[in-house]
Image (cartoon, rainbow, N blue to C red; front, side, top):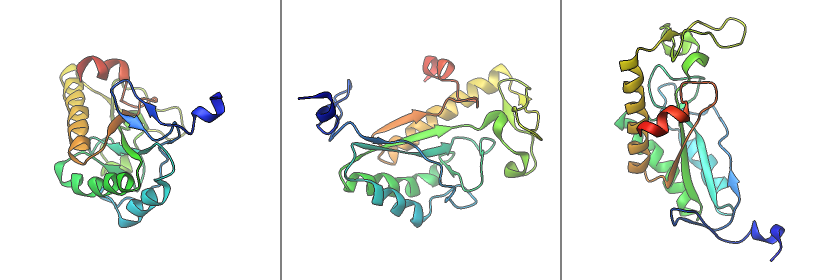
Length: 185
């Protein structure tokens, strides 16, 4: 079998999970969640329409804390009430034969105060994002960092409860530094 053919054949991950092929849909922000971070029926159908022919879909980032909402229309996994909507996405993807993976994040210094009720964003340090008009976040205390790590853990628990096959932690320039999180989760 050539390397080009391998991409279309089943693939077993180190944990034993088998994908129908090596094709994955990367997480793409759609901004189609409700204002409160809950899932819309349009979002469920968006993922259903893309499932089936690929091995797995990584669902767009879900904020793990209400201070972590980084864009309008983002979906969240910050409380148990959001599990039911996320479960609809996971079920729709899996019904078509693809694996469902959820990306979780905290916006950190990228958060616009207008999106979080005028509150000051929080981040590991009080350094504003490198863009015009970015607010300077409040630096989290050591205790708050531990609390945030716990919130990522709760996000993982909720993703499993919703039926996702895996979780990806978004780690770009926000609060989600995988080097810190993976030592704690």
